[in-house]
Image (cartoon, rainbow, N blue to C red; front, side, top):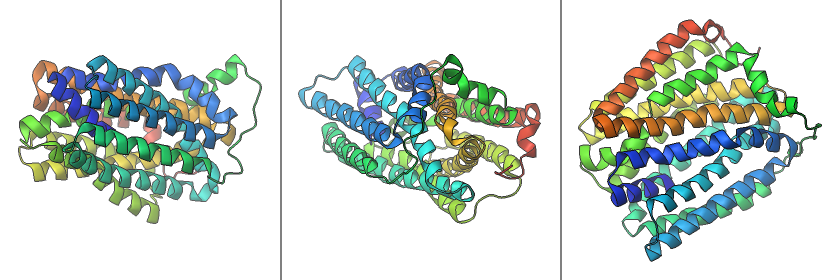
Length: 375
């Protein structure tokens, strides 16, 4: 809901594709700055408390956006400042949540647990953008108030999760422990190849940052249409994640992941060239479906091949790769759109994603050879 409201409000305020890209750049900056701190926190403190606090902070930022909208005090700088606060909360929450989920179930159930976690997230992503688009008709402040309320409720619910291993043992703080997540990934070509694949593939495929432009200028629709476009990837992702929860991928895991990234690129190309809303929604749904296949495989591999005592730190670095790709990809799309136009920017991004999938197939043969999630 925040993504719909902030994107539409910022574009209405400035009419600038570059400013839409700056939303991603601001979140990228907070992710870079906090990665190592996030990992340490997730492995040293109660993970439930961290998640609850992150949601309360995000709720407070949403409430501030509502107040600023009501009094007409929001400027581009203030909006981006609050985006940075929300980005910081998400930077802490994402890796901590991944580490917590993996500690709640036995190892054989981790892939299914991750698939269900993704499906719950995607279900919200389907409802909330469409709801945000409809509520925005009543005023941007209404969207922000509803989002703030939901964040606060989610924070309270997180505090009541029953997790016997949510409070990890605290090891002695050293420079080596501070950098251990990076060192662990550097020593594993499989994890390094998998994370860098996502980084570069999504870096080129950041079409979602330009959805406000597509909704208004290409597909000639309004906030409700933007809400549908925002929801479409999540529809494909939800259906696929439920399928993966019921039927986990057990063979040729690496090849499936590489093919999913290539399909993501093809779907991006189709969306770039589509002048018709139904076709655009279908392309975005396929994009979301292929992305969730890659996400579930990647998260499951990271959690299963990392000791619990280090899951927070490794998940933080993993989140840096994924967050960087999404947020920096949004900035790249905004910058390219400002230079060449929205359609060429998305088209080039989709072609770049296909090229990355092909290149990584040969640069990291370890990816092709992964036959199962467990060693």
